[in-house]
Every structure is written in C-alpha cells, then in structure tokens.
Length: 310
Image (cartoon, one colour):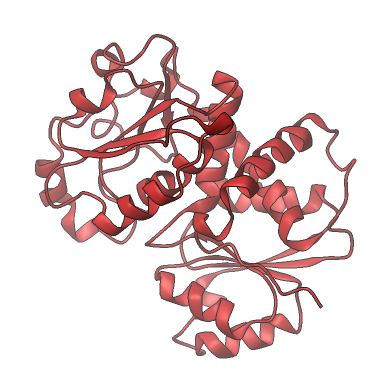
C-alpha cells in the first residue's frame, strides 16, 4: 500500500513536483469543469477553525468538479482540541473520509491530525504556513510572465504565514525572493536557509537568491512581482496599534509600483485592509492580478487534490 502524502507545508512537495503541479493546474483550468473526475467516490472533510471566503468556496467547488463530495465542519461543531482531543478527531474522521482539509489556529493541530489520521491532511491555512495560497500564486505568476525562472519576487510587509510559504516556494521554481519587513517582523533565519537550499533553476542556471531587507524601496528594484499582505493577520488583533505604527511606510501604492521592473505585476492574497498595506482601489491597479490570483486558488487546489488522492 502506498504511504499517504500530507500537504502541511510547501516543502512537503519537491521542486520538481511543484512545477508538475503548476503545469497540471494550467491543464485543469483549460479543461471543462467536471470533465476530469479523479475524485469520483471520494469524501473530503473541511475542518475550519477560522472564517474563510476564497479557501472554502474554492475547495468545495474544486472537490465537486473533480467528482468528489465535501463536508464542511465549523469550529462550533468540532471544537478541535477543546471538545475533543485532536488525536481522537483524526482517528474518527479517518474512518469516514478520504482526506481532511484543515484551516486551523495552530499549526500543531495540523501536525497532530496528520500523525494520528490515516488519510491525507491538507493545510488550508495555519499560523505557520499557507501552502495552497502559494501554489495559486505560483500558477498566477506563471500565467502572467510565461515562466518563473529568474524572476524577482518582492514581498512587502509582515513575515507571516503567507510570506513564509512564498519564501520557501518561490526558489523551488527558480525565482529570487526578497522580503522587506521592519525589525522584529522579519522571517526566521532558518526559513531563509531552507529556502536557499530548495532553490532550483531550469537548465542549470544560477541558484535563486533569498534576501531579507528592511526598506520596501530596496526590495522592489528590478522586481517582476510585488506582493503584499495584511499587517495584522487573524489572531494578531491585539497587536493592531503596535503593528500600524511599525509598518508605517510599508504601503504598496502606485508610487512604489513605479519603482519595480517594467511589466511587473502586483499581488495580494486578500482580504485587503484598505488604508493600511494598500490604498483604496489598489487591487484594481492596471498591473494588479489579485482577482486572477484569487480565482486560481480553485485550479491550484484541484491539482493538489488530484495529486494526493487520485
């Protein structure tokens, strides 16, 4: 029997598999919805501790289009780790479904679900990583630029779960990664080391670079992709005032985009906090691909589901 595969972190798939999944997502996007049904007869649980728009809708529609059946469970229904131990939830769900998609407060819950469950577990967001978002991002960049090798991605803002997955994912498809963040909000050194080790460029080109920076203006020079996210993520609301002060000057606006490379695209994983990391209307900027990026969650996740379950 083949050992199950989990998708808790972007590093759970190799550089080669990352490229394969992007190419497969492009194929699935071009195919008629419902035309390919590798999940026929498969049952998937969506176990969510946090609210969601894009994640829930894209997963439920994607599962249906692949021929599967999904069941959504809210935090009130399960009480993960409170009403029942995570280990018990994992064991029980493994007898009902073929996979668990979990959107959790703590990454430790994902690890425990994977450890005690006998079916694949997919990270739909944790406090540590957001790998499904990164897969959609890499798909969008591939569509926008035609390739990823040698491109420069500049991330402006908090070194959060989205930034961490991007940092680990971009070098695996040949992209250089730079993050501009205030002191105290930067990614961990271990993440930069792991990202550098995963760096692969097609045709034996130079290894992708990873740079921690402070000034947004330094990060966007020659950037082909300018990416930002909220300054205060879910769970950090108590730090809102402190973060607003720390990130003053980190807004991605028209002026900052003009410093990037010609033809650069602007990305945001949404939801946006207008007046903070972006001004009102920035997602409608002529160079913005934010809505394409959101819609690509569907296609990227279909490729991941097929990879893990078919």
